[in-house]
Length: 336
Image (cartoon, rainbow, N blue to C red; front, side):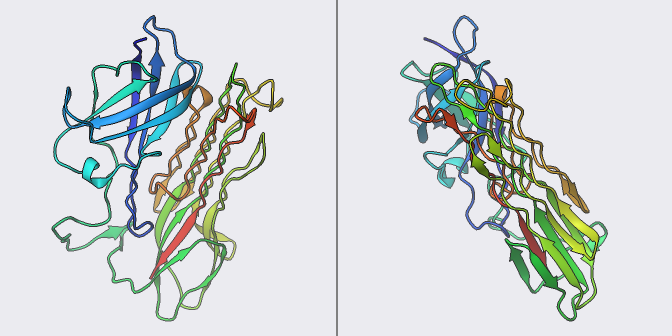
């Protein structure tokens, strides 16, 4: 049976070289699947994704198959490369890219979709074959390129004593991601849940006093303790005494689905968790998790595909009440 994709959402995640040495090999992707009569397709389907460098014909440069749970209006969200990572040789080669989708054992959907540019770069590790030259780089009026000697990556909370001779501290913070909601995985009437919200991102350059003691809080990942119980991600903050100088809030947990087999206090159409709020010279809210009717996908952190990401919803037909994934933990980076 021929089906059609109505909507498309692509997001190429940013890779921050100071945080992760490996460039991410996944692309966010979502859409709606309709039958030929226009009615939404729901339930469990197998989708095969293939990339080509031509609109018709040719040989696929990459392919993978995923089993996904479609919601009531045929919506779904996933990550291309989750099963078979997308290599740089496919993503970064010159020319156009076209995505072909096959539903179960049907003929491929036609036409293929051309992939275009996205707000974030797939590669941010280095400048290929060149240099960056500027007379000055500032953040909130303070010089950014000041010859930092040390970078501290903090994955747990504690105190930081400003070293002797240091009067300026460059702070980057990611809040923890919220957990995904619990799905009622009844094979006859599956009910999706909301995805976890992403933690926020905050950045600032602080004027500090040598030997001052700063309190560093690193937001933990939102966890799922039991089915139908999910937690928000923790806040990441840098404080001097009672004064919070930089804050990256944690993402909220996704709401659970109400169903016959679980979550009697759940929602008929669960919402995704709220994205975290931030304060600092650069303050970027975390993306909210997707609502159940949008596929329950996880919220993405604005500045990292790793830290602060929300938890996915999980479908397992062998488990009637399937908890979502935990979120990703936060991080605080200090350069001086």
